[in-house]
Length: 321
Image (cartoon, rainbow, N blue to C red):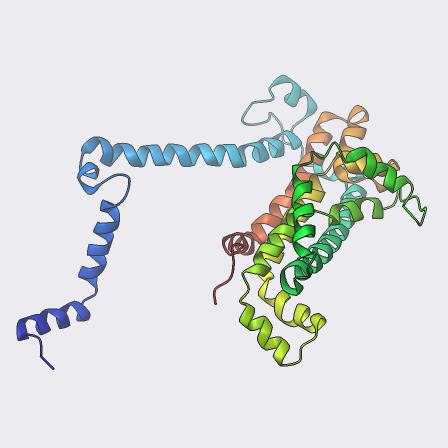
């Protein structure tokens, strides 16, 4: 074998001993490959103008995202006269801390929030059951009629929701074969929510990315389909399960039209339906406090599970082998 010259060996050893120069070169190369080159960054206009633009964009995003929530909180703590006289004022003339407890008792926000939580939890359980089992059959079991079912499920995404509204409502009024009337029951919200084509296709795409070697190895070990589903597929699918769960909860929390149709009983209505109904008999300050309490729950849920949600979105295309 031929040995390298001493100078090259020393140079190579020096580069391995000090990775800082290599890191600086990689950083410089990455910057050269960017939209703005290093030569352009040295210009005063770019050097000072680019950070200013970034700061302005960040401020705009913060104002657009947090501004409505802060305005809702300010209105909820203001008097009705302040809201009508200066709706865009930055600070109320007097803070009414009792608006929030009054909204809880007089508007019965607690009861409506409880109904909303029941609807959201039931929709979550039914959606996860249907989309995981359906995706498991189409992706892992792969029956002969699987592509046909996948095509039919995909075709439903191209149908506007208004078209299926009347047939779905008639189905709720009289269930086929059974003849049950599900109106004024939470089942009328849970069951249609579970049959979501988007969630099934997203889950199937994730299951398709699971290496087939793992599935075949589990089958060789004697795992049944149920064992394969519960012990292998579901543990590997935690990120996408979190994404679907959070989207389902937020979607059912803000749904208005369908609960309005199938839950005419005020005692069963969620907060999205109850707030417009009580608007005519409630002060505007209490309405704003109730709306703030209604919006606060999904925002807090997202802040708590944002890491899992973002991780699941990033891994929704597949898993690493």
